[in-house]
Length: 375
Image (cartoon, rainbow, N blue to C red; front, side, top):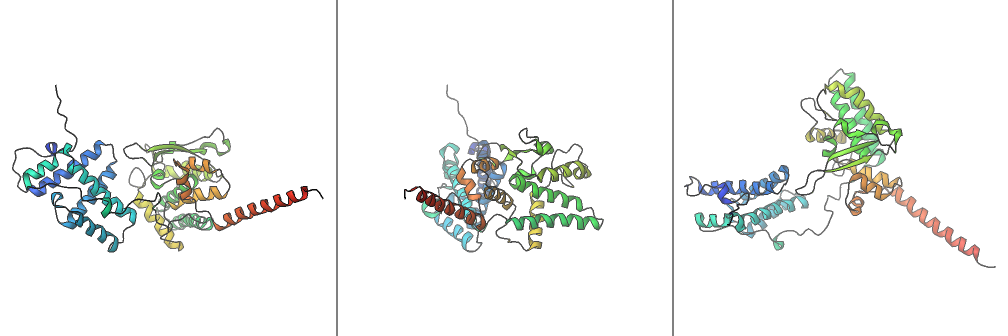
């Protein structure tokens, strides 16, 4: 006995057969988009990923003012050229847009989902794949980040943290309530650096995610940080890891925050390490605006320094201080050492010291060998 299995996102699940449509082209396109979303959700992709791809496909359709069964490769050429020349989007962003359209076309042309037959029946034509290697950029480098992005120097980092602390005192001296969020964000920035965390990893921390490290009792209750919302791979849940405390100043600021300041937010029943004034936890937009304001007030490099630079700085400073690269790799949760190397922006002083040490060792070895020769 044959069981007829219908794939998520198939035309028969999104359109009612035998029913006349008032606006057939528009309604079929909307049904295709809904099917595309359902097909991706069935693959366990994050909703944010699905929504981003939907928005890219809709943006392309709006730009060319045509429905998928009318698309051509020339339309892709024009769209991507406009994104690059007029909107000046990053290469990685343009590639993600083209990949979203490519994925949608694969979906729309796959016989399993029946959309090609549906379009042929209703409109006398059908969608085709319009994104190819010959009309899009090829991904040939592992690292396509903006070359302007870098780590903080130690002086810049100290200036940022000092400025954040000064804002707390300034607001508090005026008797305004805003000193509590300013205090929270100052500690959050320091924590992101102290444990090499990404922005979302930091904001999603709960109070219980900090704990003792039996091999580092001097750090007390803040010997490690359990990251539960690490960067996920496609279709997989967030990746977890534990980050060990390495700097002796971090437990002090965390202890003050959790014992004295955080309770002032009225956090009964709220597990978030960084509660919001109006919700469960602080949002990404809030962190971006606060970070951007401090960066501007300090006159720091706006193109090169962002929240992620705190993580770059963590990797860089540990390597400069002589920590084992494998330890650093495990701390930041990189699968490959080459990824950690991309984060490492060692300063000229570190390179000069390393070069000088190796040159001195070479000279010393040569002199020792010469002294061993018989007279």
